[in-house]
Length: 384
Image (cartoon, rainbow, N blue to C red):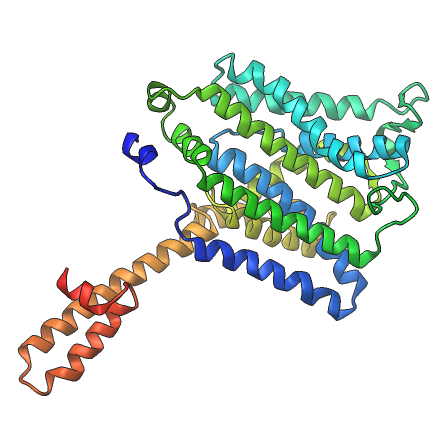
């Protein structure tokens, strides 16, 4: 581990893949509005908010090693922070930042007692689950007139409706149009993804991964493991709060269901299906499972089967069939294909050596081309 941290190693060496993913999102950013389909843009904004939420869990769990059942808690806090503050201020600039600051502060307080109290992963999971449940039942019971913050009432289980959308900074009367909301949401998604990639490639990110792999070794090397885990926890909470803010601007409504355990469980499923330890995987897992959930619906199907049961079975079969997740499995298949190509290329080159000239020239060239797919030059491969 010492050599790992001291060297110039970067966690994600496949920078081409990183920029390829960001490039695809940029292409969608400019192409989708051209289609002139407001319903499509609205649906994409919903997926974008959930993908940002998936990224928060991917960072906390996949790279920080913190099993948190409270991402829906931070998601709900961000949403309620925006709804309450925009109802009082009448302008969205400050509420937008409060939607990230409030969950971050809450995570800092909660995380301080968990991580500096040296609680292990099981207790962290239980505590975040318990706090999420407490907030859910508390918000549910705030339907009375006395439960208000300034001009904004919490409304209990009825939820807060008719929430003001984003406006141009400093101009409360200039609300963003549907296209502008789409551009803003997609831009935030791209910034979140690229920002997390850059963070994980920095010295801080390398230490975070080292802490996840072996806390004791990282601590013996002089790193404050508690502080790094707390920082990861706070960053993940802020990103989840951003997702809650984007979700509100999609549906102009928020209720205690934002804290519900069903959402907390879905977030974990997104990461499991997509692949723990990646950022792209949870994004794909989120889109796939949300689409499956949309297809199945939310109630009993016409055939009398409960769609929640069907959804659970699909997820269970998926996780059992591909335990590593989508992205790590595809990566393994690619590496396995590379090993097969190297083996075939080696056999072809051996055959070329046994063939008489000039007939062996074409066979050797074919073998070198196979090796060239996997390396910088065929000559370098054959020399090795």
